Image (cartoon, one colour):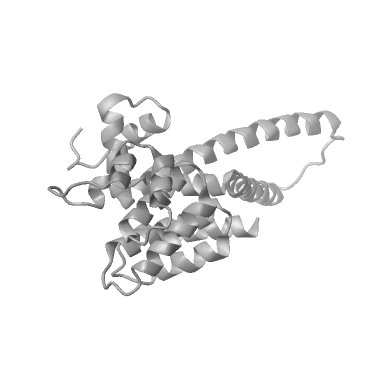
Amino acid sequence: MDNSTPYSPEVLVQYLDGELQGSDKATLEKRLTADAQLQEQLEDLFATREAVKIYGMQQQVSSIHRQMMDEMAPPVRSITPVRRILRYSVAAAASIILVVGMFFAYNFYQLSSNRVFNDNYSQYELSDLRGTGTSSTAVEEAYRNKDYKKVTILAAGSNDAQTVFLAGNAYVEQDNFPKAIEAFSHVISLEQSVKGSILKDQAEYDLALAYVRNKDFDQSLELLHKIQNDPAHLYHDKVSNKLIRQVKLLKWR
C-alpha cells in the first residue's frame, strides 16, 4: 500500500474484520499511530458498524413484538389517513430514538479505562529518546532487550530524566501503573525548568493515560486539558475532544 494515498473504506473494514494481514496490516497500523484523521475515520466506521448491529437487534425485537401484539390485539377500528400517517410518524421517530439510545448505551457500557488507555498509548522506542552515535547505558540496553524488570531495578533512585522516563515505560509494560505514575511525575519534576523539554511533554501525556488506566480520572482530565490548551505541546494534537469526553464518561460511571 502507498502511505501517500488515503485508505479506502473497504480496506479499513477489512482491518476491522481481521482480514488485513502481513505488511498491509503493519503499514496501516503504523499510519494510524501518526494520522489522527485516519484514526477518526476508522472509529467512525466502527461506530457505524456497531450501530447497524444494534439496529438489527432492535428490528428483531420489534418483529417479535409486532407478532405478539397482532395475536393479542382486539379488532381494530378504522382510522382516517391523517391519523394513520401521524401514528406511523410517531412510531418511526420512537424507533430512531430507541436505536440512537441503544447505540450510545452500548458504547457507554463498552467503554473502559483499559480500552481508552490501549487506544491512545504507544510504547516508545529507544530511538525516540536517544540519537545515534552515543553509547548506551545499562538501563537503555535492558530496555532495548525488553527486560523491563531489570530497567526498573537499575533506574531505582535515579535523577536522570531519561532513565526515569524509561523506567516509567517499563512499569507500564509490567502493568504497574501506580509506579508508572510515580516515574512520569518524577520526570516532569526533573524537567520542569527545561524550556521546550521533549521528555517533559512525553511524560505528561503518558502520565495522563496512566492516570486513566489507574482510574484517577480527575488527575487525568486536569493534565489532558493542560495539554489540549497548549498548542506548543508535543502531544497537543493527540488530545482530542473525543479522548476528553471518554475520560469524563468513565468518571461519571
